Amino acid sequence: MSAPPQVPTEVLGWWADGEQHLGTALGRLTDEDFAAPSLLPGWSRQHLLAHVARNADALVNLLTWARTGVETPMYASPEARDAGIAEAAALAPAELRAEVVAATGRLVQAMRALPADAWSAEVRTAQGRTVPAREVPWMRSREVWVHAVDLAAGLDFADVPGDVLAALADDVFRMWDRRDQVPDVAVFAGDREWGTGSLAVAGSLPDVVGWLTGRSDGAGLQADGPLPTPAAWL
Image (cartoon, rainbow, N blue to C red):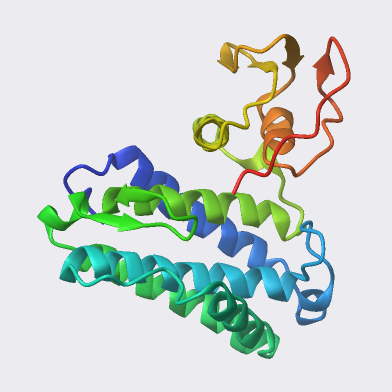
């Protein structure tokens, strides 16, 4: 799709490529693989895929809110969110595959249908943060890139483009800063740096992002002291 006003073309590219990347991970799973654990504690792959599908529909709700001006939350309630995931997770593997694809298609159509002036409309995330609708493509990008790793289908953060990894690290630190949870670290990956704390942490960009997002314990990183356990990201 062409870049709508106020939405960087780069972000739309990240989103499109991320959906394809998730599709690659999904395509590597056999039906029997669905019930096995994902990399998220307590979540099977089928629960994770159900979440991915329901997240797409939740973001459609935000775009509907932006288009109509009628408040349409991502989820009616935390309980409704959990119920929607559980319902989708109970589908047979072939049905769940189809639902992931269908939900992604609904999100694509909602983005294409959004009028230019609606991208600046303010909506509210599930965490209660007010954002312009133009943030929706990035919100979906981070979901699909990270959850493609979480599916444990042979893809890891080394398979994520460097600019996306850097944007993920930026996002983590922004979230921590909003909640006053930035750890006392200065993190280095190549020529990139995050944080101004007293503990220096360095490593490859994939290893750094794996640790920042809570997907690894920091193995492969170098630090001049014990690594803290980062606060939750999302």
